[in-house]
Image (cartoon, rainbow, N blue to C red; front, top):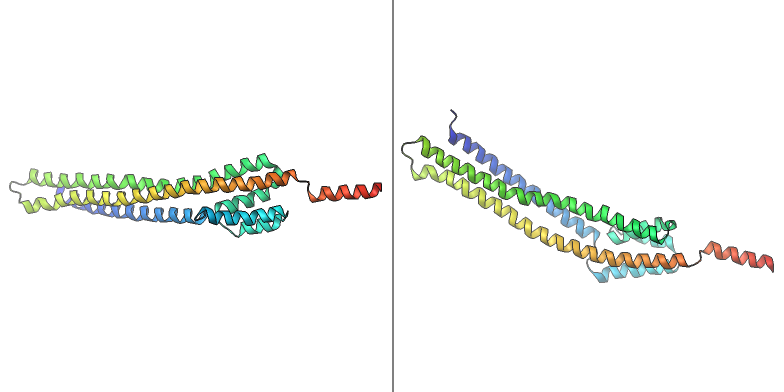
Length: 229
């Protein structure tokens, strides 16, 4: 029969390694999500309003190429969605609106949720790994009591220490990740509010643009009037 103490010792080392992997992967995913949110959102409403004012000026002057160039130079969500609206301006107001909402939900929010799902997995895994280490430590302690006639407190201390250490490490990993994900969720809600306001401004520009007569039509009207004269 294999020695329980040896098995528990190696299993404890494996548990420590697993906790380290969970901590590293959770921290990496959290940093990546944080950077992604920072990349696609404006830092405040004033900064977004400045961009939208410039966009309005280009659209009001019927300079769609300038508006598109302004958007392509900015990697944030609202400019990229505005560039998508310009590229599909022939679809009409209703279809553009549906397209922008769908693209924001699919490419922005769904992407963030996918990245956050890994962080949530690590938050759940860390305490479970800690609990697994606790069980291993208790198995080692009771194994010594069962196989030895005389067990010193020092012999039990190592297994009990494993049980307590893994529990503490699991909680120490999960708690900071929970705080970080809550902060990220606040930033995502702020992103949704800003994007909603920004898309309303962009769609209003296209709504007014669709009501105005295109330059080609005006030219044709003037040519026809000159022919009649």
